[in-house]
Amino acid sequence: MRLHSEKIKPPRALWVPFELGRPLGVPNDADFQHKVIDAAFDLLSRKQGPVLEDYPEDVPGGTPTEEEFEMAGQVCPIDLPPPPTDDSDLMQALEAEIGRLAPWYEMAVNQRGRTTVGISEIDILDAARYLVDMAEAEAPDVPRDDLDRGPMLKLCCEDLKAFYSEAMSAQPGMDTSLAIENWLWSQTSLGKAMWQLREVGLESDDEFIRYHAQRSLIPDRQIHLREENPRVFDSFSLVGK
Image 1: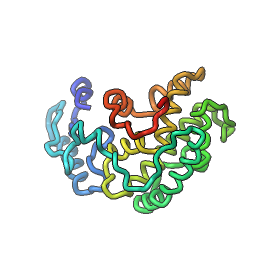
Image 2 (image 1 turned 90 degrees about the horizontal axis):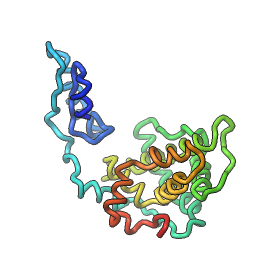
Image 3 (image 1 turned 135 degrees about the horizontal axis):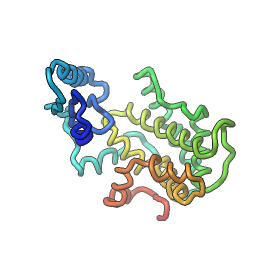
Image 4 (image 1 turned 60 degrees about the vertical axis):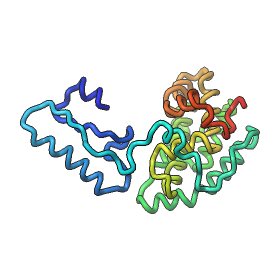
């Protein structure tokens, strides 16, 4: 962030106008990324510092406006059923979603040659089952002997978010993380389960689970989007409806 660089005053810093978490711009655009890297290395030739320079070029297509951010990912190219209104059907809906996304996930892995799924060390359906049990305020057996219930839940959530995000990234027109993020949190049964998990977690007696629900389960911008723009979630079956 620019403000941090202004306060810390590192010897050389290049500020870029890209989405947070993507310092090189657009994924899979080697030419654009190399231009950013070259601009950063050019700062090493400056004889005096500190230097804070702005990168002059935005990503192809530009940074999304607030309206574009709200609407990104609202149309899903994969034919997924709507999230269930009955919580008793949540696991069944998740199984169906994961089954339909699996071929796209495999395609994404084959294209990249890598995946970030696997930190829970359990099958993705078992991770979903554990999440749903926790979201329904149950106390399921922990699938691993070396972890407590809270840390296991966090790893399952991270694996599921990665599985969905990687699968959707293989879809045409879903090449930005904003589009994928909005789709996941407002259009999927996984999103429904995690919103429900957050509500349950915030009331938990377990400090780890409570902190996870408050700080790391759902991105802050999605929480703010839901609070400030409820119309974005009008078609989504959220807890409490």
